[in-house]
Image (tube, rainbow, N blue to C red):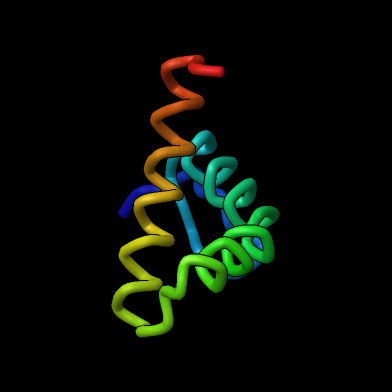
Length: 69
């Protein structure tokens, strides 16, 4: 057995990569805004909302990694 270094976000998710944990925390900070956006575009089904939310999260990660403003 070996000890690992991990990062736990405020919603209880555990990450081994600090940057991934930071991305997740930032996404949590924007959750209310994202939900308002999804409401505006009429994403009402749970599956639709989950896909749209995940797409937004991945877009933000990509944008940050590639320094696109």
